[in-house]
Image (cartoon, rainbow, N blue to C red; front, top):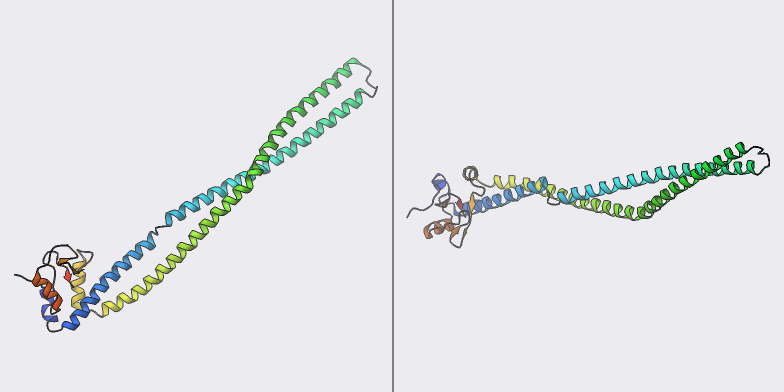
Amino acid sequence: MRIGFCPVLFLFFLGSETMLQEELSNLYKLQEMQNRFELLKQRLKNHPESKDLYRLKKDADEMETRLQEKNKRIHILEKELHQMERIIDDSYSSIKQVDQRIYSGQVTTVKELKILEEKRKTAHLKVEEYEEKALMIMEELDYLKTSLPQEVELANQKKAQYKEKQLKIKQEIDKIKTELDLLQIQLQQLEASISPELLEKFYKIKRFKRNPVALISDGKCSGCMVEVSVMVALEAKQYKTIVCCENCGRILV
């Protein structure tokens, strides 16, 4: 039966069982650490809670926009109400002046009396019209001002949720960056503890397979899940040479 040796490295490690075992252990650690490094990089690039943060920001901005529009509407209505109240006051003043003229005893002709009565009628109609408009404005103002405090509270809550989530994500990102920096140093240290020949073999396999190193678990290669022969498994445990999976070519440890 042919054993799955990696012939390029056979002579180099023959008779160096302890050193080989340590290097293979470090090689597996290197692989796991690289996987962790890549996982953290992806998490940093696409944080799982970034969509929630975007949604909270969007909701908070929309609420703030609605509040601004509502406050603007209140300001416009208050200005319109003030103008209407002034028109109503002016109309009442005009009616009062007309009445004073009519009942002053100074009106001597029917024509003048009709003109004054028409003027008073017009003024009354204007008062009715603008009082109705003013009432509608006051009702809308009452509704807006009544609902405003609750909307302000909801908007503040949404802002607080956004800031809380933003802070949480920032802390997690800072933590990830710190771990990445530490991993970078540890990766360099691990690579330095492994022979150039073994590293070359590792990265050569890595060009085609994500994990170049595989464990023997339940008699199978953890990389391809194909059963490993007894002789291959025995050779791998003896650490006399590099042993590779006969099926997928991964380095077995």
